[in-house]
Every structure is written in structure tokens, then in C-alpha cells.
Image 1 (cartoon, rainbow, N blue to C red):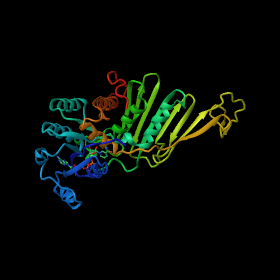
Image 2: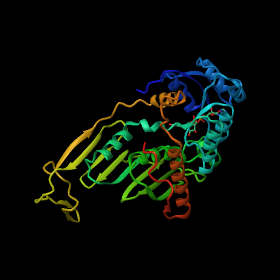
Image 3: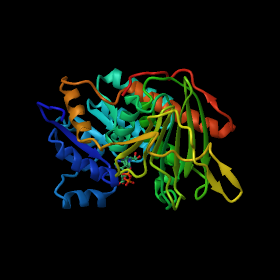
Image 4: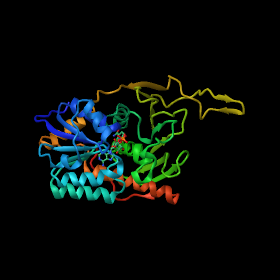
Length: 361
Ligand code: NAD
């Protein structure tokens, strides 16, 4: 657990789905005094008051309150930039929900404001604390799979894209900006020793024409490592959450509540391969291996505490820690998302030459 010596005062802006989460987690982190919330809808403010949380009368009132050290922005995506810049100009530090912005130019404007006003800015990349991701990071780094050449990360639902602002382009809707931003951040967190050279993406429009309701994105890292990310919202059977293959073995997580299954080769001198017989022929090449030539093990779910996101944030404000989710990391993910949109538009891979191995996370 990250240590925090002095608590800081925070206000959550937007008391919707994620705003509710933030009010709970900020308090549970024991690093923050939650001063209140502000939502543009009076009924959401009334609900906050019912839940025992002070609701500010206006955004300006939050900005004018000298006791507020930072704000957490849990509003639709197109509002992150203007609110973040206004808050920093008013002397507040800012946590923005993801995706920070809809373009790298807008993101740069936020970083410039952060430098100009001397206020900290970060983004809630909470899925860095997901156990499935942490186990895959461990599998990659351990070397047990030999030279890893392929990593697949998938999230698949069957209810289409949510019918709220997430289906609208002007609000920064679509699955690349919603789930993609997490899964890309995780993929570059796993393969944190290689540059990405090319990006290829195809977007789905099964239930929504305006924004992508799913996508298949390939990140081609240098040295022949491919990271495939797929998000789907029309899938009634889900594929495994993570799958990783190396020259000596493979690792799989079927479901995000599971441990990781690892199968590695222990004997390459296999002689009597029993063929698989199919209706139309037989194959030795594709026959499964048995326990004589492989060894199976498990990576167990680590202890992971997402409250450390807030503890690190407060410790950074206090000058006692270094910010975990950094500006170069955020810019790298943004540029990959931009390249993904561009690749989908032109129908070919897009070269990526300025988001190398930076800030391994
Ligand atoms: P939501 O629609 O449930 O809530 C948004 C709230 O913001 C609403 O209550 C709305 O009234 C309020 N709002 C709109 N404009 C406002 C303004 N100008 N000032 C104050 N309040 C305003 O949406 P949500 O699901 O909570 O998503 C909010 C943000 O959180 C988005 O950026 C989304 O991408 C992000 N999010 C992150 C995660 C995560 O795991 N990190 C999960 C879900 C959502």
C-alpha cells in the first residue's frame, strides 16, 4: 500500500456512473477528504445530498473554493479538456477520466496548461490494477514462454454500445475511446521493452453507424511482437480475455476472475506423435501435446489495490511520490488511438514513429 502523510481535499465533477465510483473510492483510499460533488443536473446533486455528500451549487463555486486541492472529472469525454484547463487556471490539480481528450492536439493543450499554471494533471487509468493485466505482465516478463511473439487481449459483450452519450461522436463515443484506451494502455504496459512500428485497425458498426461499436486493432512492435486488441459488443460467446504465445509455451486467461494457465514445453525430442483423425484426414502437425512433453503451471491473481491510484496521486501532490500515470504515457496511448482511427479510414496499416519505448509502466 502506498503511504500518504497528509490527506488532500477533492471534489468529484459529474455524479453519474463513474462519479459515484469516485466518491466511494476517494473516501476508501483514506488519502482524500471528499468535500463534495457538482453535477450539471439538479437531480444528480439532490441524489448526492440524499447519499450524504455535499453538492456544490455551480462549477464556479467549486473553482472559487480555496479549500479544494483537486477535482476529479467524471463527465462525458468532450468536456474533459475545457473543465481541466479551467480548473488548473483556478489553481486546482486535476484527475480526468479516460480518455483524456479526443485528439493529441487537445491533450497537448492540457499538458501546456498544467505547465503554465504549475498544477498536476493525470488520468484515471484504473485498469492498470486489474489482476488479469498484472498476471500477463508477469508472464511476459518471466521468460517462461521463451520469446513472446503474440499477445491477444479481448473484451466482448452482447448488448451493443450503451444508448447514452457513448453512441455519439460529438461526445467522444465509441469503443476505441471507451475500452480501447484501457486495453492499449495495458498492452504497452505488458510489452514495455519495444517500440510500436505500425498500427492496423478495423472498426465495427454493427449496431451504431456513427461511432465504432467494436474494433480489431493490431499493434506491431519491433522485433516481431504483435499485440492484438479486440473489443466487441455483439458477441454472445466471449473468446479468452488474454492469450499469449511464445516460442516455448503459451499462457491463457479465459475470464477476468481466473488465474492464468501456463503450458510450457519441457521436451522437444518428441518422436511418436499420435495424429488427430478428422472426417477428411489426419494431422500430426496440429495434434495437441500431452503431459510427457509439457509442463503446466499457474500464475495466481496478485493482491492488487486500485485505491493506490488515489494514494499515489495525493502522495504526488504532497511531493512524496512520482506520478504513476504520466503525460508521455497518456500521449502515447492517444497517438495510438489516432493511428487506429486513421488506419480504419484508409484501410491499411499506419506507421508510428514517434511513440517509442517511453516511461515503461
Ligand atoms: P454518466 O453519463 O453516467 O455520468 C456523467 C455525469 O456528468 C452525468 O451525471 C451528467 O449530468 C454530468 N455532467 C455532464 N456535463 C456536466 C458538466 N458540465 N458539469 C458537471 N456535470 C456534468 O457517464 P459515466 O459513465 O460516469 O462516464 C463519465 C466519464 O467516466 C467518461 O469520461 C467515461 O469515459 C469515464 N468512465 C471511466 C471508467 C473507468 O473505468 N475508468 C468507467 C466508466 C466511465
